[in-house]
Image (cartoon, rainbow, N blue to C red; front, side):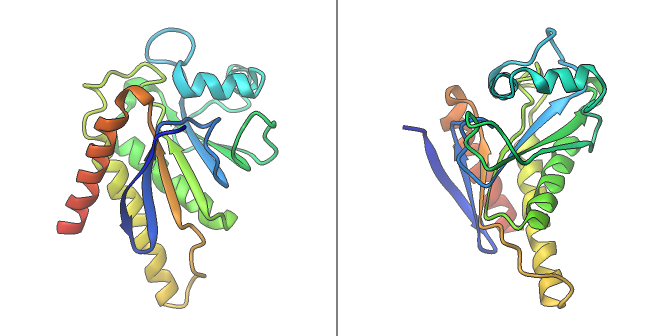
Amino acid sequence: MTKHRSVGDHLGVGIEVAAWDGVAATVDLSCACMFTREARGDRPGGGLAHLDAALSGRLLVARANGVFEAKRGEILLIDRPPDAVGAAAVLVVGLGDPDDWSTDVMAGAVSTSYALAVLMRVTSVAFAPGMLDSGLSGAQTAGAVAKMIEALTSAIAKRGWLRDEALARESSVRQWVFDVGAARYEDAVAEFAAAIRNIGST
């Protein structure tokens, strides 16, 4: 059974952490992040490798051929994924070159994913950062969780403001799941929960 736990709630959106990846996530929209190249090695590992395999290698082919270069902010929406993918649709968000990576890049990827989820009128979203899968170290990614939570809660609040001002419809998003590896699941749960508590105290 997949490890899956609620870590908080923000303005009606339940925020969770699950030990699954972009392939196994059983949601309306599964979001995966990808660099223009791997920080170490010539192929991604972990969940990003699983996603590429589920797509019969076409994700890496698309990057190699320039169809989807994974430049920062670039997106690739797969709305007819193969049966091996648990989600109804997959969104791949480009992170750019790993040498230019910062926690602000992850914040931007979360904001982009939330915006697309709102436009698509989906209810449940999973987000796989893919930082470690592409070769960044744990030390390099320090602070990323806090930035991702800050970006998500800010995006939710902005949408609520637009709704209150009669400038937008109510967001359909009610569940947001951060995908993490099984090996760091318990640490990730604690880190995400702490980041949400910190948002609530500011």
